[in-house]
Image (cartoon, rainbow over all chains, first blue to last red; front, top):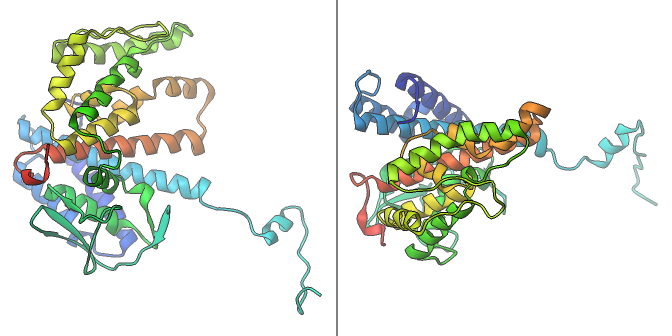
Length: 110
Length: 247
């Protein structure tokens, strides 16, 4: 079985990621189906205890995998936005790079 | 299209005849080929709904890996049947990343031996097969009996789970690492690390370039995690609607 660490830590991380996901949607994250499903699953299997049980381990692995998914998507999106999301510069910005300003022609081009 | 404006307020799931459906406001989600989007597992439906609900102003389809996997399972755009999927998966063993070794530099060869040998050994033991590794340009020589064992094993999965397995294999470039994930022997983070061992080696030597290395790392983790979760959620007999999982 994979080295997963503490189930409680996984649960906390997962709930935190769900909170981030909901912040984007602007909804109280405790109301979301995902949050309620995760909590219910952990309660039903009491994964927060130390007992070794196959169903618990499977659930913990699933939770850790889902946590990895949510976290990686969020991090990837952040990197995408920071490095790849800016698109082209406007003509104003390009002119500004070399210290110029575009001419202003109130009546439009002649 | 890569992105589209978010056109719905509420996302919810409901249970239909064929399984669980996703509702965007009052509209039912459809696949790219306009079929009704139905999934066999409630947990999977909830996770898909969460993907849709996480979208802010624009819908970023390239981040919605579970939705994409479900669409592939429902539409089967490559028109492959179960046998073809299994063959594609097992064929990867011939060029499996963790069996394909370098001789130089010595430090990398050592790293590959230390990190990959245990996983190969695990697979050989778990599946009672011979796999080995090779530094030859033609790759490892996989016995037919080994391939047959994996073909048999994969045949025990339903069509949806197989789409997921083949997806993970394609992402990680390794059948063995993928089975390690599916069998819960290693975590996604570890599987991705092992898949990218040479990159990690180079990064340690030369430094990391965030906008390329970390970007690729996060994307591979997301895809491998999505694929693994998809396989597990489609395989759980207690939560799965078998009618939908036509073999």
